Image (tube, rainbow, N blue to C red; front, side, top):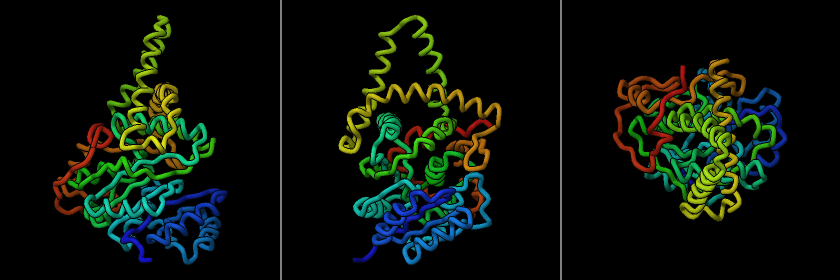
Length: 355
């Protein structure tokens, strides 16, 4: 069977290899369908172990040494996309699990778009995964979710000079950069791609970092920051019916997201009941994110302190119009002048984190 015209790029940096066997099995399946490139920033011993496990299956590369982004994942993505032999490229986190049908669909969608945004869901789905799935359902209902995998056309990526890697919310930065450069962005809410749930330790470590991401979407961040004082005020005044109404509204929104584009078979109905709890968590962690910025000047991530969540569309359009060079990239060409699909608040509204 012939392979798809598709390259699969996995940026990786592991400190422990507990999931190596399972990941290797997955990469072997992907390699039957597409070229697989793993850009591995792991320590030397782990890198060598990975090279042995993946020999003959993947192209195993180190991140390009000239790339010095604060966010190491962007170093991996940029190296991998540059090295890809196919025009159509899937970029995916190490917990993402495509099947053959999903890869084939992504390849088809990239024939008509410069960037494709699928929808993730957790499989298996322990409680911590359902908790984060509640966030995904709210996003689907209101603005669209932000997946851990994207499809991108290699020619457009190089045409725009890559994207800025000195940001925390790197996927949003890539989406906005493509849109700002005139690229065609497609949100494929009906392309559902599995991902493995995080460990409990990793899940807990994500709480404040994910809240910090919302500095990139000021309207959302403002709403989250006002939520905790408002709930506290309603509770102090014993406005229990009002609080119950808010909880019911959040669950109803999550149910709208669950039913959108037939996603109900991938998300359990019980997940919608967790939406109020997730919203309460975010109302608190958003204030912790503000504290991080005030006290430390940024969010710690993978050994770096990153001040900026993502740049605003206005800033990225200014860069594109001026023909500026993206960090670590090449000067972009003329604007293509195309932007379609559901480019919602997550792409088109918002500014960089305070600097």
